[in-house]
Length: 221
Image (tube, rainbow, N blue to C red; front, side):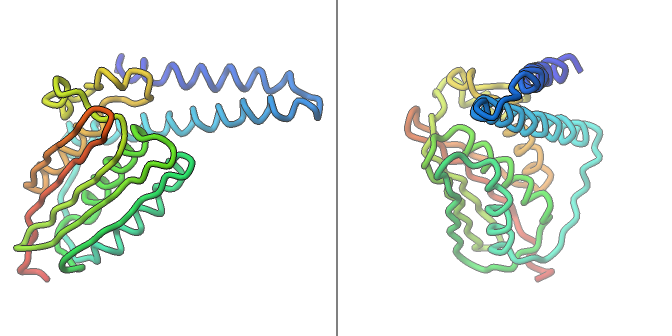
């Protein structure tokens, strides 16, 4: 609870500060100043929503309230749906590139796969600069689904990589980037529920690739 309070405090302070300053800019020639604070409020509210989602997801996982429910669905369709939902969190000229190989129809938990995709892709966007693409590669072969989320962002220091899936851990080069340090921990927990694995490859200042592999129930296809 104390960690949650700390995470909420900064964006809330930013909202309150900008809201109070907005009231002072009443002249039409001050529109640029108003817009700056409106955008700051929007960014802070977006960050508050991310924090809330992370803590709610962690809470459900800790209370064993996340149930696995398998269904058959079109994976490629889900990938494009996810890319569309990510547009509001992308930076200027960032885009999500989808590359799929193999069968389109898969049998696993659609909701958990989508949550993994959203977490990894929004993370990739956050730690990448403007105009840097986020690539989602998926492969279905031999009753396994493999997903690579690839960015060309700041990368992760080698000493930090072994700790990245721990809750609340943040890389030493990510201090100035907003986040809870829960995203990859939650992804790992979701992958565990699907009896899957998570692997990470990263080079400082070059980018990061996170690979998820989960077994598929081919009998229900």
